[in-house]
Amino acid sequence: MEQFLRNIIDNNFFIYGVMAVVPLLWIVPYALFAVWLERKVSAHMQDRLGPMRVGGWHGWAQTIADILKLIQKEDIVPTAADRKLHFLSPWIVFIGSYAAFAAIPFSSAFIGSNINIGLFYVIAVSSLVVVGILMAGWSSNNKWSLFGAMRSAAQIVSYEIPTALALLAVVMIAGTLNLQEINQQQNGWFWQWYLFRKFPFIFVAFVIYFVASLAETNRTPFDIPEAESELVAGYHTEYSGMKFALFFLAEYANMFAVSAIGSTLFLGGWNSPFGDFLGGPFWGVFWFLSKGMLFVFVQMWLRWTLPRLRVDQLMYVSWKVLTPWAFACILGVGFWMMF
Amino acid sequence: MRQYFRDIFQSVWTILVGMKVTFTHLFTPAVTIQYPDVKLKLPERARNRLYVNMDDCIGCFQCDMACPVDCIKIETVKALPTDDLGLTSTGQKKRLWVTQFDIDIAKCCYCGLCVYPCPTECIKMTDVYEFSEFDRHNLIYNYATVTPAEGVEIKAKAAEYEKEQAAKKAAAAAQAKAAAPAPTPVAAKPSPPSVPPTVPPSDKPTESKQ
Image (cartoon, rainbow over all chains, first blue to last red):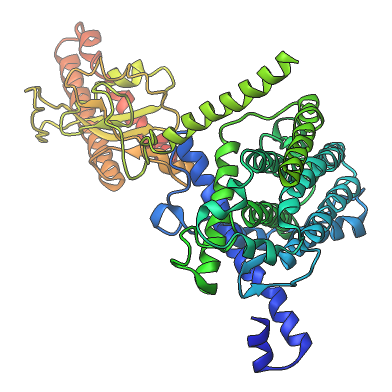
């Protein structure tokens, strides 16, 4: 992709500008689709129908109508709010989740930035979301917002650890942090994926990663930062209009980002499950996006299955279950590689 | 330690069970009834919008009296001997012009008490329940078959007729008085009922403005 663009116009600003916008071309339609899908999935899991009227077929245009409504809405800022931080925080949250896409390989021919420390960068930059959330909670000057933001910070900081440890188990086999290279190592049939190597250690690591990533994206059953039954809406209680939409977009972008990392490290990313069948850069995009969407669907599935955890249960799961087991996986993989 | 592993196993297992439940529900048909497109059949005796079949109404005021919220407003005028208002479907002769039959459905409490006393069964509950309006005044239904203009005409005629009758009666009474002064109190009796029909025309225009 980079080479292709370089053949058209040999200008770094142009090339990197285009490369930076490409993931957005996926994320925005994806977010609209995912919000619709979430509503449909939730509805059908509860034997309802969900949106059915807007746009004709099963209410497909519902989220487009919603976003048009949000654009027209008044941008309300509370009088007691810190206006600058209040304005800035949705952007920081979105930038934090969007920046992660820079190092994620969408296909063998497209990766925003093919850096050696790709995985490390993704983990590091996605933590920026916490800053934005804390900022939103604090600047709103609202008790619910602050509660939500504090809970979110506590949750994300504790769940970063099992996430990183679970990914480390894969990194130990791969021997690299470059996500494109990790993908290439999983080339071939689906049993070449890291998910099925060094069984069961990587498989357990995958489960740990998935559970921890749910907590990192504030999804149910770990959605105590926005627990609507206690905290109105958590850190974005005081946001309206497009700022609120930006939080929403960031949440869905984050959902896809963690799914993309999961599919890249464990499910072979853009690799076709059937060797060279339907392989190549273009089919690669298809496989990558469908694997990501599969995880997004499982996230929704879990959301409508499980109730919310209590704060102490949340900490118990992180520190007493996920973290020790992630260490056990690292040790297991390490011993396997030694002998 | 055993409890720890048991807890983990149990939570993983129950989550899988729960996911199976939600996944099967994903494919069970929804119970939603998409209301404006699909309507459930109402029970046979459902009480919704009132309907009055004016062809059968004899203006007896039974429904008006039965109504606990006074949402029915009826006004009748005696028919002249020359008028033929026909028969109801139950074979009763209609003796009154029903110049006004308004039901304020906004006030109606759907108790159905007006339906039972009706001697000709002309007022009844229908299964129509979609009659919302932007203006509350549109919820006052006028069932009278005579137009307001006709109503005024009928009333004027009736008043004229009454006057004529009263004049005739007075003449007859005067004659009778001249002939025999004794029975006058008896002959004068029919004149009081002639007064009430003359009263409504005076307050009618104000009422019809509603």
